[in-house]
Amino acid sequence: MASMKLKRWDSAEHLQTEQDMQDYLRACMKEAPDDAIFIVKALGNIARARGMTQLAKDTGLCRESLYKALSGNGNPSFDTILKVSNALGLKLSFHQA
Image (tube, rainbow, N blue to C red; front, side, top):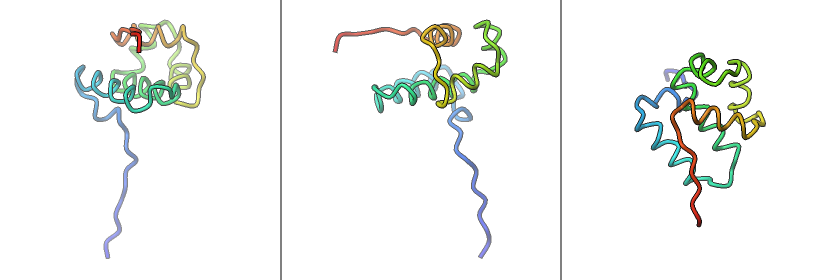
């Protein structure tokens, strides 16, 4: 029997278009609307798909800090989330439930 090589799934590799990224974030928000870590990780996947170096330039934050903050293991400030979402062209909005 031949051995099978498995590759770790990376969502960022599959986010090719702006629509892909919007749909992905929307689906993540729908899946776990109260899970801040899950949502931050989704933003991190979008950021990696777009390019972390450019995001660092656009936000004024260092690349390493962005990787850590958006990894799902970090605890980014709301200011960081706002800077990242603005740099990614994402608009946060709140609606009454």
